Image 1 (tube, each protein chain N blue to C red):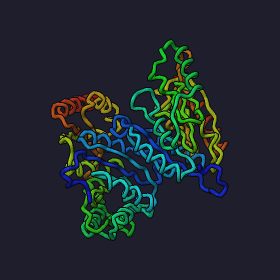
Image 2: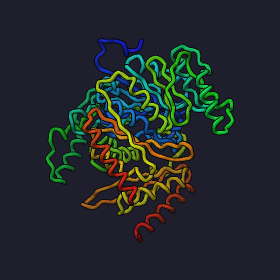
Image 3: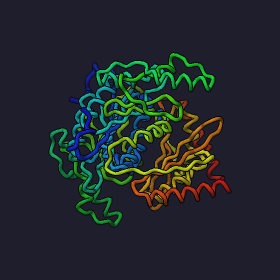
Image 4: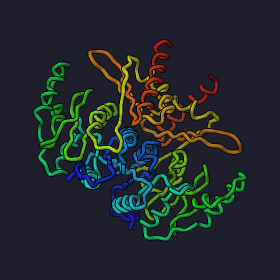
Length: 252
Length: 252
């Protein structure tokens, strides 16, 4: 069914479905497609097509079914949150003809997460544990509600920092044209401070993809800077420049 | 054929095809889809779907033909420049089963433009005058090479400032749910100076869509700021704030 195990299939290809009325209305600007595009290029996967569709079950099913048939991998972003218009899990299940139900492991993760934070685990929050039968989790280190993989379709969050963190987990499991290396450095500076100079570092290292992920743990904010490249020398050179940049900012 | 003249068709809908390998490789981040989304929402047209496709004739034809059949309007961006990978005009002609040839009026506009600038009007620049037989021009006030309309498909440039300027010309010809009003103000400040404070003005006036278009004429740079809204009071209030902002920047 998926092209993952087909030995004769030379080009590893991918497609993306960006799900959400807020994108099509212009209220939110999508940044996940551009991020996925950079990562796919870095690891030698050919991103063939991206579609933005609305929070409409038929639209999601049409896009996912057209794209999963002709690509090695499909990635989706959006529509896996707790509100009524988060219908991605149901739509993906319907696209595969599978039942969609509460996943025990996901319920456990979320129950513990909300208990630790003293937040009520409401019915709407429980919605985030629903997924197609037999789906595998994609870890969510930021807000815990997992994404999932079913067949060759990877279902991930729309919030960019969570989408990126989920993609980090997924990327190592993909069959790729080239191996992607990554190294990271943690800073207690905020993204607002790091943003502009980091953009300069990225410009000077076109052979790498540099990501910035805000984290919040035990009451403290921090930013993780991840450099990815197929080339170790390029990777180390960019990482060195990031360290110099951070040290300048710390002493400023 | 198009749904423009169908009196019984209540919802005015649109779709977009973003064309270009540079978008799917992550080298360039698309901003045209977000801009189109905001404009469509402001004028009451329902943007149903956006697709990013590569510089591949079959991919462009498939997307355009699927989307033009089920939407009132289709907008494309990209692939109408002078290089070998600019194949949008040919692909759109093929999608409609029309011949694609040099347009006399477009050749004349471009010949004059390059003559005035003392630039040779090469064969590759002449490519920009090619369009499907019977297509109508969309004016390009920035670099002159016109976009075109064929059936319900509007073919526009990928460079954001040109895409936006072309959309400004097109938008008044569209059948819409609401009438879009627009007013503009010209400034000799650059976008780098205007950008951040203009973002603040946009945030304070969610009922409007504010665009910024760099211009270069007779050796002088300037920036045109365009405010659009369905509501005249909202429009005037945003325009007033822009004027205050510009005056503060001029005196800074």
